[in-house]
Image (cartoon, rainbow, N blue to C red; front, side, top):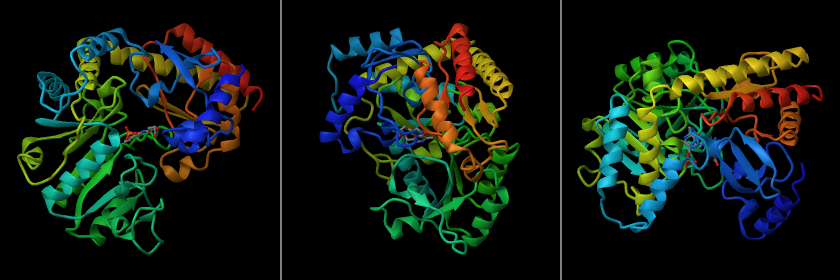
Length: 428
Ligand code: KE4
């Protein structure tokens, strides 16, 4: 495959956009080489600017669960655009998608729409702090909740329990209110609560982590977090930006049967347009402006085009009783195929999967948290990524990302992918 046009476009983009991209992960820094530029996409296939056809396993990092250019979404956006693109006023459409989301997701009475997953998670911790009148939050190493200051935090020194900034521009003042825990380590979480008694507003977690590869919660871990929060009058926030409407209609809450106090959404809920959201029971959501004192706002929040896309997406998922079973079966088939061909080639690997989230790690040991995710052989991953790209299969350009399966994939596409993995495995 040639990438001449993408390379040329990247050189031009670098002149006017920092790093040539509007989001760092697109720049291929994790795998080397120059990023591809998308020209168009349809269903499971993405066409780059050199007219290469790629089977897409990124799917815009999750939203395209039903495939690119999904007709009901496209039609809804076109129809809505003809009537105006933004009003800065409430519209009936927002009530319609709010009602539908609330009917699909357990334990939420109200939802507030924003424009990104970052905004959803940022607003959720502000709401939790306002509701509990406490300042500190616990997040987990390897979990990503967007680029709001409170989340760009690294582990502090061994002795301290609070975090330190992991980006310039984040202040110590902000970092001290974020405590960093180890995913799947409940004793570590208990120790943080003991060391910060009555100061912790909330735990925020990806109930299935997707930003260190796909890392499932250990059996009972989420329920244990629920119990710790109840015992300490803290809130449990599920960041379901990735898992929401993907793992089940009701997301991870439904899949694991664990109740969160606030749930954050993004990606699928917007059908590919900029939508985030956060939701909770009335007792919590009624603290939000203009009803309550916790301020949160947005010029384009509830934008008609984005709401039209999201509503078309959620209506399709809500009405198709078999879509999640199909996604489960397709992803299991892919996992079994990749497992078989990597074993046949004596490759050292482990595959993590929950539903239609899957990741391949080049390490023999189980990947259960950020530390074990970092043990993966990144040089092998780079060869794997570029080898698949040459075969026409486009996976996430980082060992710390998850593949997102779309229902638009056929079993022929899956067999093509498995065969491509078999070819690449011989070069690793
Ligand atoms: P956005 O602000 O990028 O819409 O959402 C932030 C976010 C929040 N929570 C979770 C669990 C997320 O995965 C994300 C964003 N995911 C990344 C992919 N790992 C988006 C890709 C990117 O940064 O360009």
